[in-house]
Length: 533
Ligand code: SF4
Image (tube, rainbow, N blue to C red; front, side, top):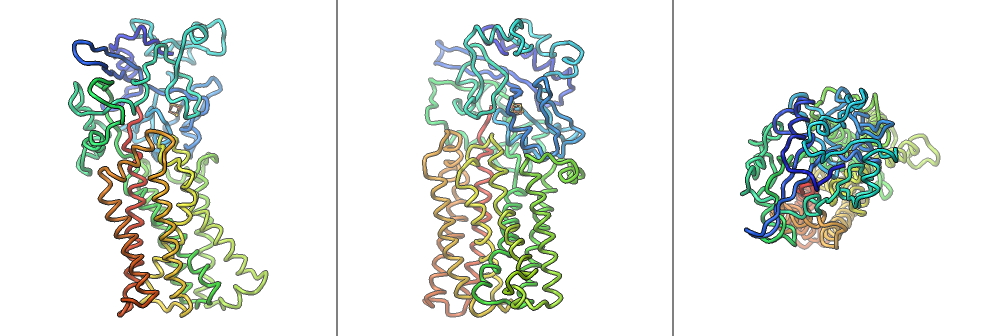
């Protein structure tokens, strides 16, 4: 429990924690945030100690694919960096920005309540050092303990209770503007604000990205302030470095290649209901689906801070994590695709085999279609486990992720149509399927971004896409290049208006694929620009 009536903002807790755990420069397990309110000389300053809340229903534990984060029987949320693969999913899941990647060993770390001291009957280092007894630790279940009595007697508050994480860190006299990051602007002109440009681990992204040296769009936050922010209201005057974008182009790319892989099976599977395809066409589709699935795996591994530990996801899985479930779904899809490709390459009689009721190949095709659908859609559940990112909690996400598969698959077939001998009955149908899925995709994008959002953070992330720094890529890349122009080309193709040289269909396919990447990019990036602490 933090007693804000007593805290003097001396940072002794931060320093004691640094010393106890040898926390490197640039990252913190606990820190003291300062905000100010009012106009000089009528100003007040408020302190808030920030750290892990040891949530009773911890989303970081739920999303961790390898049980590197776990909740002890005594309620401490602890971690084991020997298991961590550096996927950063816990950092996306924690709504309180409590975790960081250790710049020295590249694994996740956070306040663990000094579990090693507690096991010896000692108090956490920050409690020990605080000169004001503003930090109280103890057993909330013991009614005789000081902390239980304070929580029962005083008016206490928690951070973001609406997230349903059941935080076990309580504040007496907690200041709402200080505890809720969205209520203060992250301007770049206050004392210590140079930290905003990133140090330690996060400085290594400095050269790669525009905006803040850590990749955070410093100017962007100033362009789109919280609606109620004004000079008279609360402003942060001391904070910790922004961690910036944790999942970059690799994750946008992985969602894109995964949709493409799933679609390269689902699209021919659906089209073959109308006209049978040759073994050659199937071989090309299955080979391409496998290629993009392999690329998906490669991007996933590349994004890890501990890529050599990737196998832990399969060998020591934590089954509630959709990272684990997704890895097994992708694995099953890869096996099914390989079997079908082997059959196709051996010149199996596809038409007869697929249509034969109860035939083994027909069953294999249906199983593969189910695996492809699951491969496309599971990411929506993974993103929903990332409770720190409000825009990803969209109820439309499953439908959107699934739809991207037939969209990408038909676009890829359209692009390849001049070079592979697609059945004649497919071409017309392909154009219509592509048009229909594209229209649905644009409608879902519009619904997701323009309908009222449940939280302020989700609205601000949508603002980044619609009117902020992502707007050129979104409107130019996803909507015009990837949506409106291909729709016009498809209309020209299906009505023979201007498809004189047969280029409309492949060009539309290419543009849809490019536009789809832009929309995944905006979707992945925007919520990560919202500060959580
Ligand atoms: Fe701590 Fe965040 Fe995990 Fe809650 S979700 S236990 S605050 S790291």
